[in-house]
Length: 171
Image (cartoon, rainbow, N blue to C red; front, side):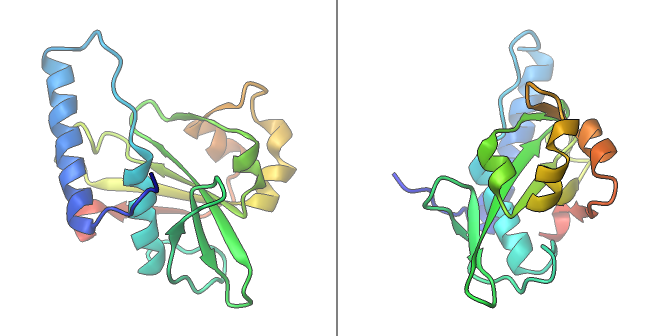
């Protein structure tokens, strides 16, 4: 079944549901591992942020972001007609992800860190880090061999990569 982009209202509702779920975990199920973020949430949100020019990928003018049909996360057409592939990583408080070859092969890797935003409605900041594919491939040897990568390690290895803070209330 093909993935479909969530509407902005659906994204807001998903965030509310995650906050309720994390509240339940804190109160009653603290010994059970917390749920993973659904990729559809972060991928849909990033598609809107790209199309609204809230997140920039180099000098590209971005329109019509779609879910990739070739195994990646998102794609769009550059002004010269080239298909640009974007891999999306999203994390909450634990702030680690596993990287695979397809992440390293992408034109861009975007890490969306929700921090404690899903735990409390008082936090509304999403940190977005954009890494170019060439930078990721050039510094891949500085990442752990297991490819389990923490956000802190990403910040150390790619200090020049643009980082933005997006306020969820503005979406």
